[in-house]
Amino acid sequence: MGSLTDRQFMFDLRETVSVATKRNWKRLGANNKKERCSTRANKRMSEKTIIPKESFDDIANIPMIENIANIIKTSSYAVDNALFSLGVNLMNRAKVSASNLAYLEKEYDLEIIDELMTMRLPNEGDLLGLVYQCIQTEGEKNIKGSYYTPKKVVQSMVSDIKLKPNDKVLDPCCGSSAFLLNIPNIKPKQIFGSDIDPIAVMISRVNYFLKFPKTTNSPKIYEADFLESLSLLNMQENDFQKNINSNSFDYIITNPPWGAVSTNNHFSSKNILSGEMFSLFLVKSFENLKDGGNMRFLLPQSILNVKTHQDIRKYLLKTTNLKEIRLHPGSFSGVMTQYISLEAEKNKKAASTFTIIDNKNEYRIEKKSLTAQNHFAINTIDSTDREILDKVLSKKKYDLSSSIWALGIVTGNNKEKLFDGPRAGFEPIFTGKEIMPFKLKDAKKYIHYNRSNFQQVAKDEIYRADKKLVYKFISKKLVFSIDDSGQLFLNSANILIPQVPNMSINSVAAFLNSELYQYLHKKMFGEIKILKSSLLALPFIEITAKQDEELSSKVENILQSDREDYPDLQKYIYNLFDIDDYQINHIKGELYGSIN
Image (cartoon, rainbow, N blue to C red; front, side, top):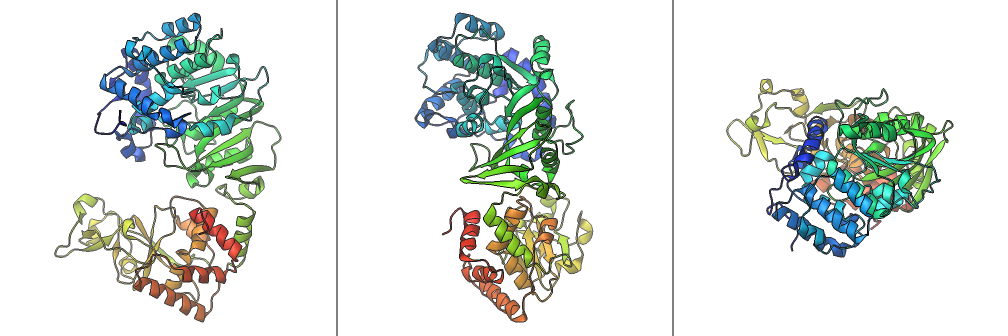
């Protein structure tokens, strides 16, 4: 059959589970309504289903998995019944012992669906996890933070682990137990896991028996909230407290929820003021490590330099023995964020350096160079980056600290105060979307400029200045337009009237829109917002009147041209900083992934 689409099904997972699972989910749903980040509302409403191609052993199996998901949806099977039936099918095929099958049948009073228990299934290491991912909509995954880890990432995080006979390993957000079950030579008694999703826990237990079909050890995998130190099922409470909450571990490996803020968990930490869930998971996991224990986390790359996460960076650098940060290329299905894995140990004496691995590059960073900064930003820079940064920063003579700064207009109600077409007494107002390098696109909105009607507004002389720069606030790139006609801007755009000695506004725009400054911003800050504090840290050099005239002329030519590239100007800026061809190629590679 074809792939699942938004239009085929309006499928609510919560309405297609058994009564028992609904009861167990009730608490999960209550927590999530309060804890999931409200800025992700659009994703939370999405009915789109996403196929996690990077998690398949063999992509040729994708049509078969889609077909299974399609059958479950079109037949309106309860999802837990369906997945359990598929699990029994797999366990029969793997010759799981009768006692282990009986254990699961006792744990889960679920209906067996003959069609699914007897159907031919493809060979996939985590078939149930894949089907579950294909059934859930993007919105459901987002609400639960249920994005399973790509297979290659799992392997890269666990393949080097060499367990001793008595070592214990915990995944507090275990999902389908991909990390736990892929650790080389792991034994049943060494595995501990928890998750707040009851279906994920069921899948995890089935996968446990598929890996150890004849084991006599019951799985120590619990439907529980690790942060609240609480089992979600009363009958498991003592077992959970004994095996997870009151235990210490040699390894803790997990992919915690991203983008959620805790508001009501019992666990809190004086070190984590942001309330960020993945930061709390990291701190509690570190506390649950044995001395000499090792933890490995998969996290969004924003943890390295975004200001919000400075609390967990400080904790990692000052409390843990941070050993390694690995940058993973690309992103995985349903998650646009780039991601990293990190490794830290619990040692009384921490090393003075840690390793950063970025593709094939590997280099060491001095921790003291990061702890000396207010934000503890971890910038991924190699020796060539350091040479370029040192060269550029050594030439710094001026900055933007004497400049005039302002925010765009906050109307208080865009729907009422903005209009799509011109009308009497109204004028164009620009948003961040219309800001391009050097020049503005045509405005899409119009407004009646009555200052008393706005929630927040800058001084009139700033908006009506003879010449000013405007820039996108939410952006990974520096994008500055020149406005010389006193236009109005909404608060998705910020305003800068630069005051740099011997430098025209055109010349300042030339520096800020250059490849070199894109590179500087990426390496020095890496924010997804263009912060005033970051712009203030950018270096400006002494230039002659002739150089200012030449730069300004090049910018005027760009303003009159339809070209979107300006190699002449790029080369001019590079030459002002004595950036050689090798360094230019390095910068282009960092920005574009290619030197061409």
